[in-house]
Length: 419
Ligand SMILES: Nc1ncnc2c1ncn2[C@@H]1O[C@H](COS(=O)(=O)NC(=O)[C@@H](N)CO)[C@@H](O)[C@H]1O
Image 1 (cartoon, rainbow, N blue to C red):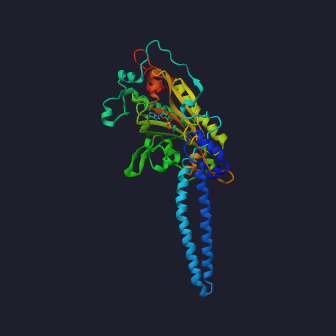
Image 2: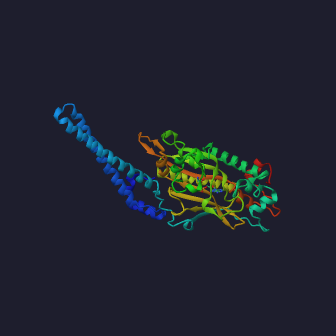
């Protein structure tokens, strides 16, 4: 969310962001509501003041004047109440529009309608050269009995899976390894619930707008989150964080649930796009200083790139366009990992800076050195998300006989050179 002051003073900038992020929002209507709400508040206050003045004069008034005074006070009270009803409606309408306002994207974001406008900013790692026809990850899973992809769908529906044997162990080893790495970078490890209240989805910006993507638990007024970001963003809602507590660095491990409502027909085979997966999330709450959050953006990206380098997975870093980055982002860099069987890079990480857009929605604030209370900046990036990361991991390191050679960084943990 943006502040009303910012919107009033930067209408063109906000209009530009609305256009560049493909948001259908009538800023004029929002500003008209803002004006109406402010004038109505002024009217109610004035009526209240006048009514109180009459009430105060009542005691010392001439008894003969009291009926007239009483009637006047009543009339002012009735008019104030009538305005307050309309004021409440206008305020609710204004709040609803405020939640739909995009954050202002950074000046370096490619302007475009969707991912087609994204730009590759860096390509790392040498693509594997196979002297055999490389198998896709599903074939590798089947020939090594590393997953159950068939019968389980009769139990749990489409886009579900079981990992088996050494691959199930590898997923645990990967998450353990990545958590050790992030702990070494000063992140506090946390397991995070997928269960979350609707307000937590509003705080991150998933709601309103993406309700369809979340599994709902109506009996308990809960939803299942698609990312640990949702619980982590609202964990400190309402607190005023002391300056010496910042930056807060969380490495949040959670199950993630996504209905993938809009993905019919995409990635239907295997592990790329499933309803339930596990993610280790890098999450930062820092002071609202653009240079400080830009520095954290770079570090979150570097952490993820370091993991991919040690997994010996070739990847590329993407600068997301204004149309692809999403409503709340100031900046988003995706990392795409090479998938040999597809002959292309596929997103495995997404690194975002949101400035105070989430903080305003989550009421996340801190007290600066001058004791002034301000909204914080929030950032998040994937550290590892499994089973998707297993797809490039298995395919890039496969041998002609279907075995998979483990990256050196995992051989100790997994007790051998091969999965
Ligand atoms: N349906 C899915 N199945 C498997 N993995 C998924 C699915 N959806 C997302 N992911 C993984 O989760 C990563 C992060 O998802 S994201 O929506 O892009 N971004 C976030 O959730 C942010 N909180 C950063 O992690 C993706 O890059 C991908 O690796």
